[in-house]
Amino acid sequence: SSNSILFLLIFPVRNRLREIVGASTNWKDHQQALAERTSLSQYLAQSQDELPAKTMKDSAVEAHLPLGSQPTLREKYLNYHNSVRFGRILEDLDSLAVLICYSHTWNKELKRSPLSIVTALVDKIDMRKNIIYPDCDIKFTGHVTWVGKTSIEAKMHVSQYHDGAYTDVLDATFVMVARDPENERAAFINPLKLESPEEKAIFQQGEINKTRRVELSTASLLKVAPAAEERTLIHNLFLNTLDTRTVSFRSRILSTNSVWMEDAKMKGLEICHPQERNIFNRIFGGFLMRKAYELGWANACAFAGCRPTLVAVDDIIFRKPVEIGSLLLLSSQVCYTEGMHIQVRVHTEVLDPLTRQHSTTNVFHFTFCVEKDIPAVVPQSYGESMLYLDGKRHFDETMRSQALPHQTLQKLYLTYLV
Image 1 (tube, rainbow, N blue to C red):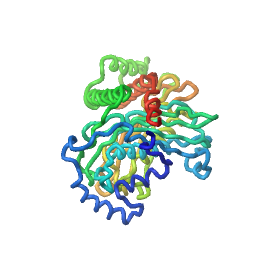
Image 2 (image 1 turned 135 degrees about the horizontal axis):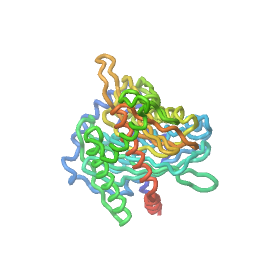
Image 3 (image 1 turned 90 degrees about the horizontal axis):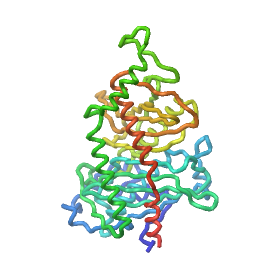
Image 4 (image 1 turned 45 degrees about the horizontal axis):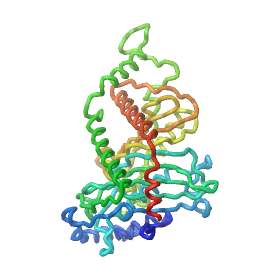
């Protein structure tokens, strides 16, 4: 029956998460509350076999963002093009993904969860429509779709009520990891019990996603040389920029309607204040995603000279947490273009002002589309050529995934409501 599904409005989601882990809304008490979490370690399972299996339906959550019925909410979500700020939707997706995973691992014997569940990566967000209306209700649904021993995949679907019906907005896949109460070591989570052929197919897709991520990581250009056809592509780009009069390796010229990669960048800085903290006293992943998205969007907008539309978010990896008080440096680069599409990579790193150490925290990949042809972006150095190829790989992967059917999750969720 649908009464096991958690129904709620989107804005109490963060409060619900605070209750689950026993975090405080007050910054001072918050540090005390986190210290008290240490005692919850005794409730951690020593192996996955100790934990009861849960079903996909056990973690099903439906959250509503009432932009239509509550005009006061609109202000926070409205952008000046009279659409919805997508960065805000990213924040809501991140909070909801964490809640879905806590619903999967919930033990009703305990008042608080001993697990610290954090976002490991965003596998994919595929946009299903261009315009999100600022004055129509939005519905988020989702549940756990795959589990390992300590990691969980959650898929979410967002739709919007317009002209009397709900239409698809986006599909998102997040991967979360469970850790001990102090957020230091991995912790076991409940296994998943599959109850129908549909659920088995969705779980299988989770396995495929995991394999694909491992393959992409082993083939990373930071580890291995590019493939033969990629090398040819880079060499041709190089030949196209040679000055035919001097025929020297040094003098390079841009062909018409092209831009050097060096001239397609944008940078930003954030000071990480306590207001942006998550339930574990680190900077909230959704905030990092919003800031990176907004910089990437601005970069694509300045590059194309017109307003870009988001097509997909791909492969966001959270390499390390961002501490409160950090200086967060963001750098965005248009790294590949094709037709009317712009591939943007945003790299974020933390600067410790005392030691002057830089450390990478996240890398984000965004695919945008505009309504006119855009200049080609051209690499000059070997490092830029690798960024270019990496951008092309992400773009090709996005185009492949956009072509796949996407209705399965919604159909399955509807059966849970019966």
